[in-house]
Length: 336
Image (cartoon, rainbow, N blue to C red):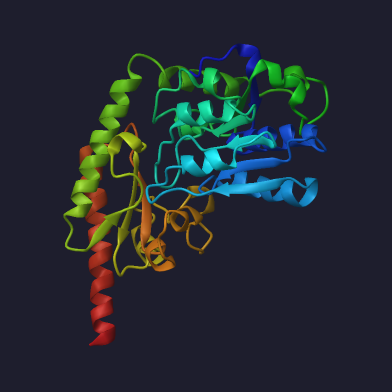
């Protein structure tokens, strides 16, 4: 799927562990060296941002959070200005999990390599969104998660370029499995499931599947935009720059938490990352693209999948409209 060799794949419990192994593993081996700065996007997954805080507090690295534009695209001019010989690693999410933004990984890789810095990509969301066949040629470390590409939960992987194996400090020690990078007996069935999912995500039908997914996403978005309530879309306006299954939409004057409480459990949605759906604070991703707390608090994320049918999408719109109608009636009665 990514063009790597088998011995460059390290199985993990998921993308969170893969991200931790990539960042902590590289940084712990580089402590005290000339490269003491790490750059990461301001819209990265919270596990990456939290590791950044650990590296800053415990190991003394300087962490620079790179800004993004209003659509979530990394500010490449800022990246260029921050890159120099003291940058150890750059971490950029290939496909954002909240607003679907696809980053220009080839250009970011070109810029990073000019200064000898390593490039890590949290690519958990990428397999269903883009062709990843060149990633092993472009990126030094790639984090993957099986269940994000319809594989089993509880298994992921970190691609580690072969030349970097000696520069990674393990998180788990023991029997020396996986070249000593991640010891422990592997769950064979889960590993096979990840491999099969990766094959399906990169076979000859993958392009058609992404196109079909985008058509379903656009159908759902069009129906939502036709509702008698003012809306806006968060993230890329150009569909080519967006995950084909992602919608992040705001309903003006609506509190998203209230809306979610009315549509669940009939419809699965979130106000930000599904991993942090129980946290009531505004999404850091939406704030990073310039939304106010009120705007971020009025936005929900919906995902369209392989098995989503047009009938289900119509039903989803009906569920959301019924909830909005109910909220509107209640608001009118309060101020009557």
